[in-house]
Length: 415
Image (cartoon, rainbow, N blue to C red; front, side, top):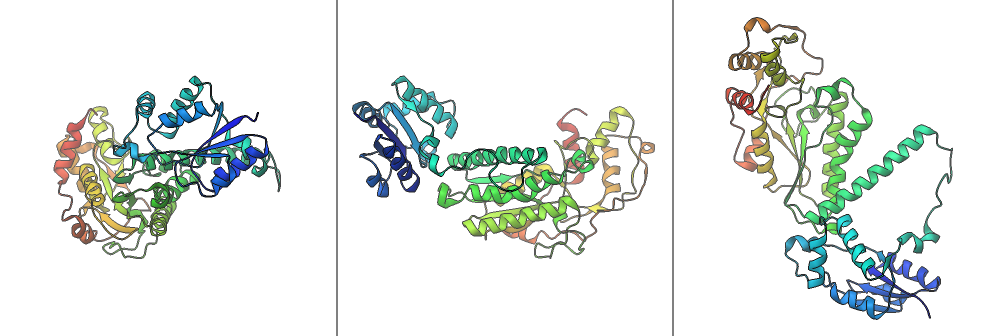
């Protein structure tokens, strides 16, 4: 008597391929199909129609067919879990037992339930062997140690990105914010890593958009909001209106612009309403040590402060709570895929005046302040930044004054 194999999952090419290989190896294949079986029906011995959320009939059929081995094939969407999808008693028990609703958590729970029935979950690769490449070196020059390290890093990244797509598809968020960036922290600026900058600034925004592709995930959210940077404009002068041709310099500006452009292309390709909010000189609670305001606050206790630049450069200092509110407001708007919006106050203040204001509020002795160093080479020189598009979309603009923002930061926590 042939052993029966339960093939559980989606329909289409991959499950049919696995079913044919299993039958060639002598299995009797029973497919548990959650959609119209299509070509799968011709590749199996029996099709059991199934519905997401109804697990009891599946377990009954597994028992009735005396199935002791199961393999998963294809993909199943489970976003209904997050929107009140009806579950039968068996499904409810499994969901309640699961440590979380990620693919990994639910799979572990289902595997344990099958094992309790005396059913083993088999590795998919067993039925895909003819189509899998052999392990090891296949062609081309053999890899040295650096090359193998890059391969290992790429494999780990691919797994992380796979989990990203699954997680976002499962959660079905209304708004997705990408606040990841490399090169703002003073330590990162002092020892820049081109690979990390390329990965986090240039590649991640498009990857995030593609992970939300409505065709594969069913995502119907409102916006993807990506945190860009005013450094994407480069030293072009003027009011940095969003339509200005950018000419960034340096690793940070160049990779941030690549991320904005990649996001726009991915959004247009996938039909996703993505947006880049170009941020300016953020300040406030949570800044890493080594940035301007944290250094001034630390000097209140240490009594020591490094010599600063002459401070004549003017910046759009934007309080972090205003930035958070602006990102939320932009996330609730509608607009074309990949558009750019400046998230700024539209007001400029010299670094020297910012320092003097902070020194007055902390307070710091005036003789502790030394403005002798030249301004950094990468400083941007421009007019007040245009925020017309921000106001048009949100009917709002950042309103926290420098005095108020510094006071809130000082009150937020210890030095």
